[in-house]
Amino acid sequence: MSKSKTFPIGRDAKTGRLIPVEEAKRRPNTTTVERMPKSGHGDTKGDPSRKK
Image (tube, rainbow, N blue to C red; front, side, top):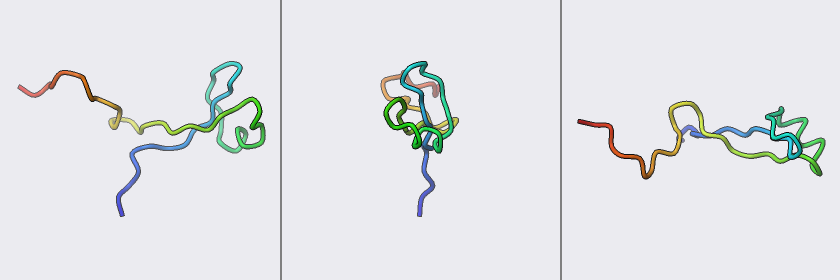
């Protein structure tokens, strides 16, 4: 089984600030739960290669 390269995080729709997932699930009208890449696993498609 492979490890996930992302993790869930809550976001307040009014302010845009990150909040705990539990709080986001309690307030579904004003929050959303999204997946965020872990450090070092971000999207690099389209970036030029850094290898020389």
